[in-house]
Image (cartoon, rainbow, N blue to C red; front, top):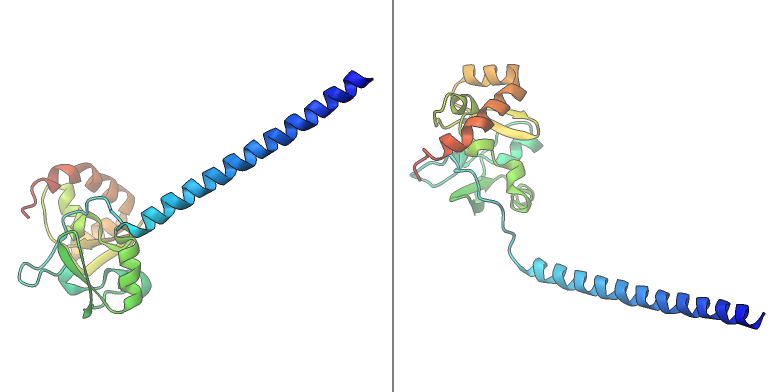
Length: 179
């Protein structure tokens, strides 16, 4: 009976020791996680390389100064203001308000036009053609710009196939873009 009690006490002692080790390990994990998060918080966000954006060589503005977030928020293109401008992908991007600018800065890949604003229908043919900000479609949660209304309509008829074909050709076409 005595050895059974000792065994029970040893099990309880082991459990307590194990519990303390787990608690200490959890605290250390939380501390290290908090430290890494704090260090990352102070570092600038590093986005993956942006697609070469269509921009006006005279002004340096992407998509002629239109606010890329407005397509999603307002359902239409709106010209941005000079007092709400950020640099991304080698171009200046303008916004209609501070909220749109903050949304873009937080995740530019969500709002910047796919393929840098180059026409995906032209990309399918292996050609680099800038899209026009007033000829656009949102498909698969991304903004696409087009050179002609006919290209926009062809893409809109079957966006899934258009996206797939443009993505296949994009790496090759992207290399031909002069910066």
